[in-house]
Length: 334
Image 1 (cartoon, rainbow, N blue to C red):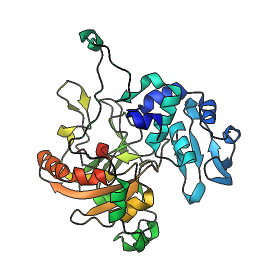
Image 2 (cartoon, rainbow, N blue to C red):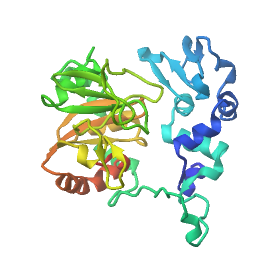
Image 3 (cartoon, rainbow, N blue to C red):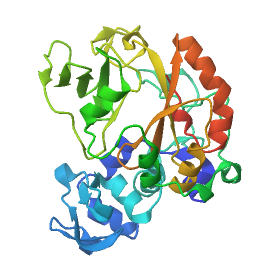
C-alpha cells in the first residue's frame, strides 16, 4: 500500500498536471518509465511493447500520447500514460505523481492541517472532501464470491448476447439507441466544461459554445480526446440555466428532463472480475457497457425514476452493496 493510500490522501488532476507540465519525460522517468521511448516518433510502447504502436507527442506540455496496442487506439495525458505503463487505476497514477511532484497539494485525510480561525476561509472557496452516505470500503473477496468466471465473459461473449451488434456503432448511433425521440444528451471532452457537444435525438449532433449566447453548430461527435469522451447519463435541456449562486450552467438539477439512468463503475476492481460480476446483476437492467478513456468499465442501468428524490432513494438502497463490491461512489450521483 502506498503512502497516499495508507493516509487517505488524494490529489486533484489539475494540480498534478500543473506540476508536471513541460516536464513529463523527467517526471515519468522518476516513476520508472523508459524515457528513451518517449519521443515524437512511432516506436515501442513503454507499457505494452510492440514495434511502432506508440507515439509520445506531448502536446502543450501535457504528456499526451497514442498507443495502438491490442487493435484499439488508446490515448491520454501524462497521468493516463503512467496508468497504462504500470497497469494501475488512473486515480492511483494521479496520486503517485501527486505524492512525487506536488505533495503540498494533497487533499483528504492525509492533507496538510488547516490553520484554525476564520482567517483561513477569507476570500477562499473551500473544496469539501466527497463523502457519499452509506458507501462501504471495497472488499475484493466479496466481489469474488458473486463473480462467475466459469461463464467466460469477454467482449465477444457480450456482443453475441447484445440485441444490437456493437461493431461499428458510432457515438451518434449509440445515443439514438439509448434515448427517446427529441431528448438531448450532453457530451464532454473536458472535465471542467459545461459540455462540449450535444446530441439531439432525431435531429443531429452539435458543438456547443463555451459561454451563454454562443450559438451551437452542427458537428460530428468526438470519438476520442486526450482524456477520453463521456456524457451525462440523464437527458437534459441543453440550455444554460441560472444556479442558486447566480452562475449559469448546463449540467445541474434544473437542466435534467428525466431521471432515467444510473451509472455503476469500478476503478479499483480488476476488469475481468468486475465483468464476471456485472453479468450477475438482476432486477436492474443494464442497457449499455462502455469505457471513457479506457479507465474503467461503466454499466448504464435503467432506473426510470419519476423524480430526483426517488432516484436518490434507489441509490441509497443499493450503495452499500455496490461500493462493497467495488462500485465507485463518485459515479453514483443523479
